[in-house]
Length: 123
Image (tube, rainbow, N blue to C red; front, side, top):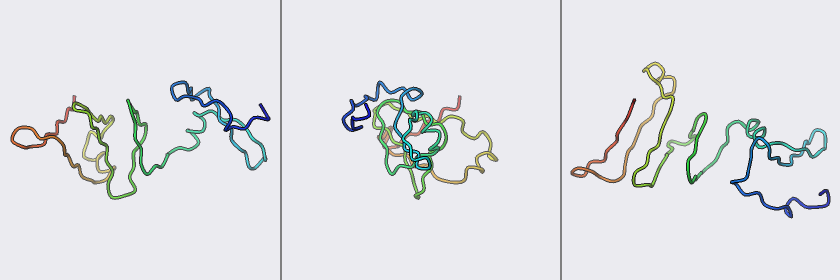
């Protein structure tokens, strides 16, 4: 395999990726050596990932924070009956103050005489 270019290798499909087992090549500049690294180890080393835009299909779980450096950020769904779920939210005013301030804007289909509805379930 030493004579084969990486671009000539078979493409791994997303459904077959095992982050704890599958490896990527990485260059260790300090030792002038090419090594391997698992996706899990690379993700851990990167910590937070910055993106200007992201789009997901199917279920997505975010561990940690989604932070916006701009003045606003949004999470949207386009399904007719969909939900965005937040876990481990503050349970007291003191905890909420540690996060900071912000605003919530709700838009979408109208119900009952043109009002947009926001339902909050706490149990």
